[in-house]
Length: 232
Image (cartoon, rainbow, N blue to C red; front, side, top):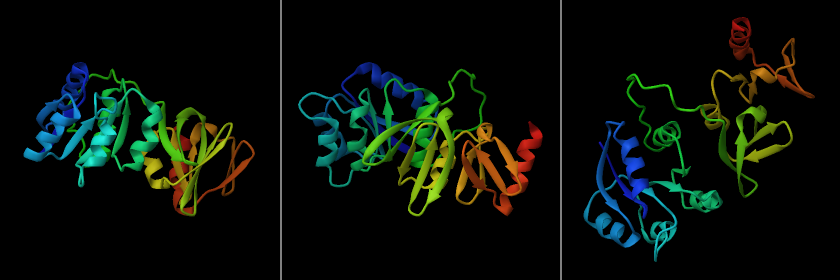
C-alpha cells in the first residue's frame, strides 16, 4: 500500500486528486495539508511514500518545502503554471501534472512513479487520448505534439526527436520515449529508430523513407513492420 499526502491550498484540487486516487486500490491517503508548514508537521509525524505538491502556496512555496527536506518522498507536482516544470525536474520530482489534468494523465504519472498498473476493471471510455507530452532538451522543457513527430532516433547518450518543423535533442532514452508514444501509431523498426507509421512514404529494401529522411530497418524488426503494414 502506498501512503500519499496532498499539499495544496485549493480545496477543489484536493477533491480532484482524492477522486482519482480512490480509483487505485493500492493508494492510501494519510492526510490533507493546505500549506507547507502544516505539511512539515505531518511529514515529521507520519510515514508518507508519495506527495502531490502544489507550487504556489502562501508564505512558503512547494519547491521551498521540497528543498527543505533532506530525504523527500516521491513527489508529483500539480500546478497550473508550466513555466516551473524545469525547476521541478531539477529537484528530481517524479512527474509534473499541469492543471487541469485528466485521469489518464494522472494514471500515467502514477505508473511512472511507483510502477503499478491499474487493475483491469471496466471503466467508461471518456478519457481523451494524450495528444502531447513534455520533454527536457537544450536546457528547456519542450511541449511535443505527437502528431508532429516523424521519427525518433537514438544518438549516443541522447535521443533526437525529428518533428515536421524542427529537431529536438533530449537526454531521454529511446526506450522511455517508446513507452510514451501510442503503440498503434509508432513502431520500433531498428534498435535506434522509432517511426510514425502514418508518416512513412515508401519502404524499399531495408530502408524507410519519411520526407527526405532514410531510416534503416533492423533485421529483427522487419517482421513486425510487415505485420503492421499488412493489417492496414
